[in-house]
Image 1 (cartoon, rainbow, N blue to C red):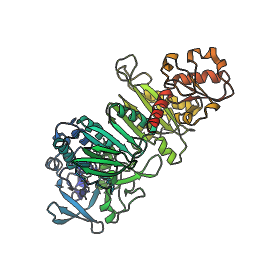
Image 2 (spheres, rainbow, N blue to C red):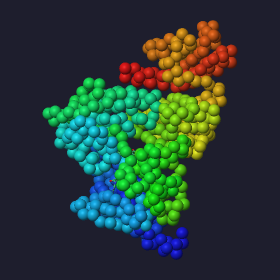
Image 3 (cartoon, rainbow, N blue to C red):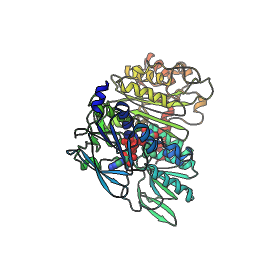
Image 4 (tube, rainbow, N blue to C red):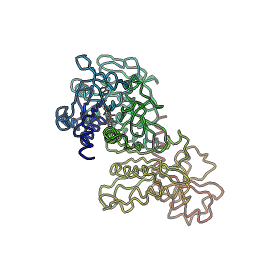
Length: 566
Ligand code: FAD
């Protein structure tokens, strides 16, 4: 853009509602493109540009210094970006015809500002159901700095020995870990049968196991009915009749897009309840834009609008929308597929794209595969196993999603797969991912390649598979379940009930023990020897052989989690 064009823009007045992820990012980009624009940030809280994602870690004491949560102060931000930052200024109305916003100051006085371009980045607010006793002292939600200060202060002033987290989403689990770290015995209450709604049960089952190992009490398929305050404690009363005694409660039931202002201003609200925006992130009112947690946007894989409460999309949208606000609508947003990660004690859980349960809900035909690979070369010390679950089109192999769980290197694998999914790639493209390799970092066959080879064998028909649920639902008399692990591996009794054991290395000599008139489901520890068995049997005339995807590891973790809920 030339000097004259910039001069043309110099009187442009941008108003931004919300000064954290989306809002602050948009403001800085606007300033970088247009040195002369007037930028006003209106933030109802006392702080801008703070690290919401770091709040659980400050509460748990992992981030020690509160100041580290602030990336900028209103003053430093205002000075560096020549922006008029007004904290404790709440926008209470928008008039899209007159192009004005009405603002309420902390002292209750109100004033009006005009705008040329308006951006809404008001975020989301925590869900707080109208349960009896929910407003009792010691029950918290976590969204911002004042919430954080309240929780931290409560932990200091009360001897919190027992804490209950209601809701096992990503933030709920991060808080469970941090409350544990702060010294509390933690119980998690979750309404569904698994933690972390975006991942499938089979992946969440690893988290269940890990939480229990860490001493966290897990109440799945349990709903809170009411809270009772008694002698400075809170009784969390479940519908089942169970009562959990606690010193504090964190509600992490979910969030809702903050749309009250938009609704009152007559802006279109979409079918999932977020502010509707077009591909330029412009709302139904001209020159009014919206980004972040408050908007809904079509999912690139389904074409259906969805709400996505993540920091990366909010930041990306903030940068992109700034270009459209300054230069006119030139930049199209492509949408987010939902790439998210959480640390749960020592475990890393990450997901991208569409999980199997979502595909099922949407009636999209899919297949899935499980692989368990070493994070780096087995002969180099310190390697750990990670599990990757892929979901994909059974005919074409087009990738729909991936979930990863493990201790090391899960993040980079899911990030790379996210890139392939966003580019419209398939399981065959995973085999082409070129990765940097040396023994401390990976293997010559990276876990992504292994996942790609395995899934491509399924798509091409080289490896028909069954899944842990198929085994659970099968009629034992109608199939042969063939365990090809060694006798040492099966000695502990950790086997699928009803299976026969013929170790892979004895298979060719013992074929006569395997009935040829029934389908055969073969399995080993993680799936590789089961695949070799399948090749031997099918090439020797067995016609209906399938391999258990992910082997005994996937089966046993999922089944034991199911059984522990009974
Ligand atoms: P926000 O960043 O929430 O900013 C909205 C701002 O608008 C708020 O400060 C609010 O006060 C202000 N506002 C609202 N209404 C008005 C009004 N009428 N007038 C003036 N100001 C107003 N995402 C991840 O991807 N990874 C993580 O690890 C992660 N961890 C998180 C942990 C916690 C505890 C929380 C709360 C969120 C976490 N998130 C995480 C989500 C992420 O922070 C959000 O997706 C992101 O901040 C959304 O950006 P936003 O600009 O839409 O909203």
